[in-house]
Image (spheres, one colour):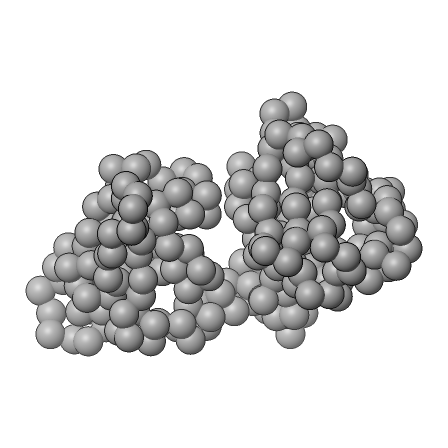
Length: 227
């Protein structure tokens, strides 16, 4: 895509404004490195389009591709040029929260994206013991209605098949409620009071949930209407 203009806004747009490109950069900034990482964060993107966008970003010098040692496939990393987009992506997110907050359609409630964000939001250093098992049960979903997050010193894993571990904390809720909590539009206290959420487990964990599982980095951005 070319705007046939020398303007730097036009030149930057040629690199960044193809569909999915900014979201791929978002995932790279959040720690995604592999093809399946990007697919988890962008469930609606086709493998063909993802491959094309990654190739374009590499050609533009925004990312570098490296072979995974001893395995098939590649890992992708931002170059210095790509890393410089971090504050720009942050500002776009802040703008989006300010001007589009509360405009989420049911079709945009992506369970896989939510669980990926929740996984990334957990600070395992603030959870006691060697391992903590969380179970999320979404009462409005007929498929993929139960998700487990296993937290340990080695990292955090998400699964949709019962891992056979004793659950420490249960989140019984619906998808929109959990999205609104993570986005900062609804507090845990209000969700529990309004019976939109059952948070079951030891009080030492349930009462401190916001300390060990953070909300969105944009959660504190007020909407334009509030301002």
